[in-house]
Length: 111
Image (cartoon, rainbow, N blue to C red; front, side, top):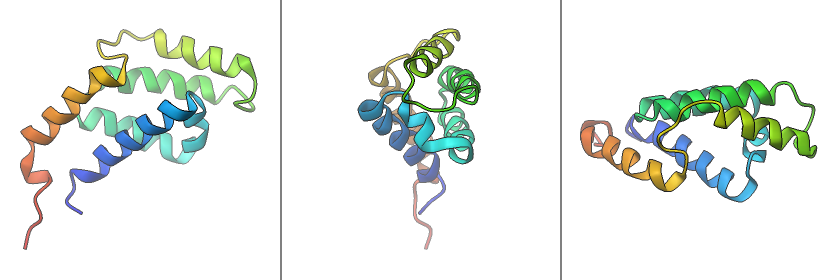
């Protein structure tokens, strides 16, 4: 696939996981995938969301498992500790669409 798809799919997949699993999505992505998810938000122009998720990822590393209510509270507080103009997925969708529109070359198949 063209290079624009990887970060966009990473973000959309993470958003989907969050919709159904809440902060459990962070533990599902884990130590190996979360840095790429965070970088993907930056790539598509959602710097504040990336910064908030960095705080979440740091808080995640302090907990043993996502079954503990303290885990979810800690991650929620970490997320809210960073100013974010786009805290809801619905707020982020227009930014994602703008990324696609502004970079059509990243979504074109070269032949």
